[in-house]
Length: 359
Figure 1: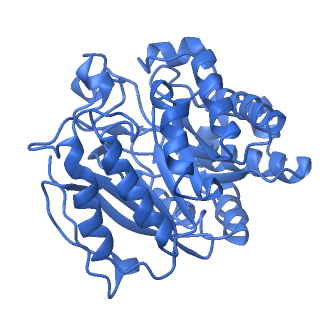
Figure 2: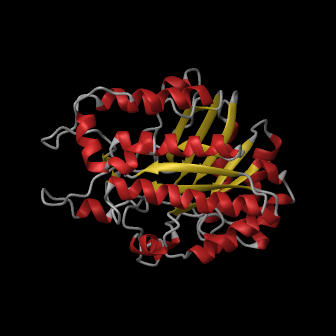
């Protein structure tokens, strides 16, 4: 799988380098009044793929000619120095799995990358990793170079229900996650939890909302106890090409992403909880603009099970969620106040108890 590095409307006057063997993702999106830069590099495969135990929803297979671990820093440097960094508030650096996995990114490459970011005007860098690679040694190596408050470590927690996560083949437990979280806080870094809304092991919008809210409450409580800044990144599940789920798609297969109404309701509940508790944790909405090819994404549906015509407008509203707190409220309310006939279908599926939560 190879993807284009072409510029979007947000990237006018920006000339990103385009080496299709090295770059898997190069997008800029509006975020907190500035921009977030999502940059993906083609490294060696994730450890789960190497173990033959890939997450069931993962569509990211190893690309041809992955970068050797010791070359990642050099390639990042070439891209970084040839890019317009104006208004970049947040750099999100993605590799094939874990930034701290030596089989993907060598120690010297990691240090080279962090030095460049530290010397730039970028406020925050986000690095993804599985819990087993979040060690004292790996975190200490970063704090020797950069202010830890500028670093956010992200983990694909997906859910705080071990049973659900186990079925997703994530390969780690809540206990292992909590151990990593404590370590992140001890080094003064920030934490981002990815929560997967309506994963295929749930596949029920009502239960999906309950799982995400319950998981969020648990994570918020954990981070508040250890005084760790938190971002809850809600990722509506989408079916990716090359995933285990996509390989088994058929007309009889009822697995599908969450309704857009469900996404909006979950975001409203999270934001209401954040405001009422006067907490300083943040909410971020993920999307399908990733380093994989989406086959099915969140939609609204007619009684015949077809994608409703209101879907395009609802998706546009959600695309504005991360821009500002004002847009956050507006985008969600516009969807939940919809008068489209398909809303009644969604309400009948999600149940009265869940619908009342939005009041």
